[in-house]
Image 1 (cartoon, rainbow, N blue to C red):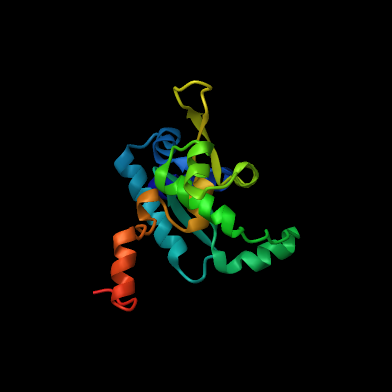
Image 2 (cartoon, helix red, strand yellow):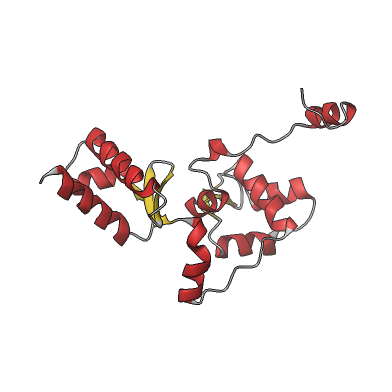
Length: 184
């Protein structure tokens, strides 16, 4: 198959997938090497980067997904009659931060950090697809372990957890207060 047709095939496969597709799986389906597949992905990214395209190719860890550009979200919601999700509560954001920066974690760990019951908030975050069960801890009772999902990465606008902002350490907070909030 010539390269033009391979790009079209890759585009069709990515369009048809509702979930992020591992690059390795895309290479397998297209019968390409990883290097050739990465080049096809770069070429498609270049095509979608232009202002005239409503699509973009995003990276989520070792996977890629074809999706619409955020700027066109209002038009898409209007045509699909999708209601805006309510923003996350402060409690939900705190639980997400604890899970994202310490995963995999148990509900008890999150509750210990926050000092309050987190059952309802964690259930809500699981239902929204932002956190998920990642297994069980090898302790009596075998408590569930939780971690973030690719949807969490997409919502945060990052392709990997390493891209999240570094949390401010307590000593750094004291230094900022002493400096009047100015970083050096």
